[in-house]
Image (cartoon, rainbow, N blue to C red; front, side, top):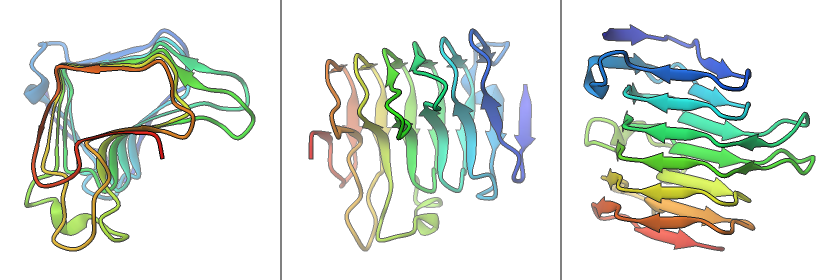
Length: 188
């Protein structure tokens, strides 16, 4: 338990079968704070990674970035019972590599993703922010999350949940979406 100020340092999970989990199971008890200095709090570039029972706040870009490398696909990511507060861009970003490897078959569940009034002034680039943003991802399950507050005074935010650029086979259900922004988007 505790607040861990990262101040520019990030966690890159590049070994398969790793779990990052708060020991108490209380996501509010373990806080990784990027202080808008850390670009991405957690980078996932290996398969079968679990992130659970933690709070991530104030990343300059993405608190969680699931991506592939030229070495291969990133499969079976589990993001569970995570609280994300005030990302600088998208809270959870999911991207393939240019080489044709893909971030597939993940789960995002029972999490709370929010942009608060305190975090809204840190959004840049004409409101370039959103909850979950996935490109060319297949087979994800996004369920039972609360996503709220993704809007700006100027500009139009991205969706609370956005699956696009060749995404397929994803199940989205049981999510609560609150705020003035856009809800769920498939395609573009």
